[in-house]
Image (cartoon, rainbow, N blue to C red; front, side):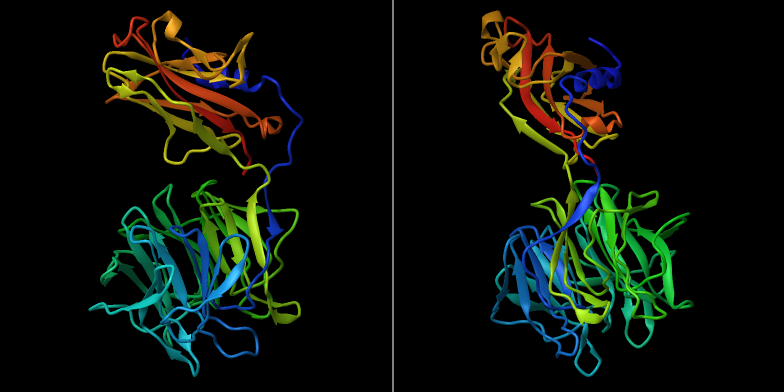
Length: 464
């Protein structure tokens, strides 16, 4: 056993290296599209669909159409009831209640709305809370998964707004933070589920035409985050939180003066700095598009929008995803120890990104029993032995060695769980390589060998 897992992990990963793989995430065009801009979009996790509502094509009337995309085909659905036609309407997906929540927007003639609707995958239902935000459009919304609330900020009702509201599925509640983000409309808001922060960027400002400031909401107050670099002044941009890569992704937007200048930039926020990405392709400059994160397929999806090169509404779908995505898949089964079946799992959706740390946990560790993690370069053979290897012959009936035993790392446990951090060297040649992990306990009197093994995990190293 060894207490320096970072060096040992690097040694395992050095086995059987292949040529370097192209790094970074890139845009690629997906199938189909909806000819619309200034629409609302959200990702319906329960049904694995992108949902689009409202908006309009340039020179056409506002629409009350609802569209859904299953990753392959766009189709217009015909619900029994629907919100009225409108633009600059905003939606967010309420994961706890498995509903897409829609609020406000502006109808033909410039009439602002203050109605709340929910989409259940089949129909729209209007909700009638006892209190709600005032009528507005071009506000910002995101789902706060830590608190189980839809968050709404700002917008425009004839004046710029800077109020903060939360929807709990029954009523809207206005929050009164000690510090609030400055009033604005046409800003972008996304929720960083790893850091439990909502991130707000840019928009039309109250004292300046365009803003380029970054704010975060922690459930109690807004905090402006100082940044030395970042996206320039803009409105009508969009953001989505890439849960697999733990980054807020921003794309596009429009300059305030002149308002016919759009951007085709891709930026990412990791909670500390903004980094501009330079993908091989981009969707092209636009504002007022839709942008969501597809959790099933682990990619950002951009739909439609307005571009003025020359001015026209776009009918396209673009996907932003890693060239080589990180993966962690469990396989095999653990055997029973005195505290139950030993289980290996990734912590909080942790994935093996190049230069990052893969966080694993081993649960079902009895008190007073030593635990260890095994790293291997193969799940097929260990030396001359084909895997898996039954450990019944040494007295551990029902237990198996599922990975090659190339490195073993002592783990510290508390409360029946052992934590295991596996640093991944920042070496591009490792991209696409696989390393295999399994947990063991030593000293458990449950069997004559005093040895218990867990299920295993296959980690493919990806690049953000």
